Length: 155
Image (cartoon, rainbow, N blue to C red; front, side):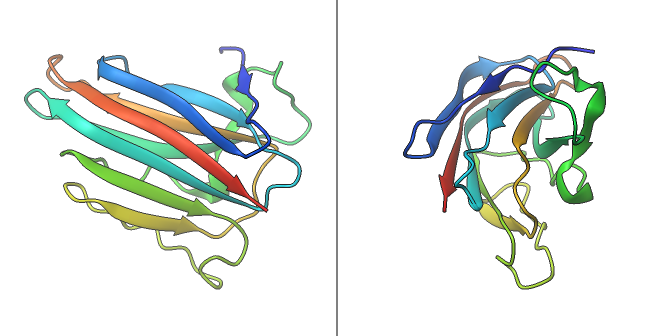
């Protein structure tokens, strides 16, 4: 169990969540306080370099069970809209995730490429706290990942 700490976006609704250079740590989750006016979010994982024997960088979006706050611990975390992690990225590329009600009609489109830039969509309302987890798979212990992680909220 770890305490959840949050980042509050500026009024423009754009946040550089993380810049990681040769990051080897696994399983980091960044928590963003979703602005009350926001209806949609766009998450950008720009993986600029991967190194190692079998690199896999995987993105997932998280939600906190209602009734818990930023002071709560991460034992009360669920996957956003019941999705597990997206397909792991194995090469430098950009993954864009659109989140919001009605963005794809009634179905989700969560199939992304492992080695090419791609876009996915999750048709759900935004939670109060949005967790963005980047899992760096250290299968052989020599993998490192260089990336930026950004989010943009829109009304």
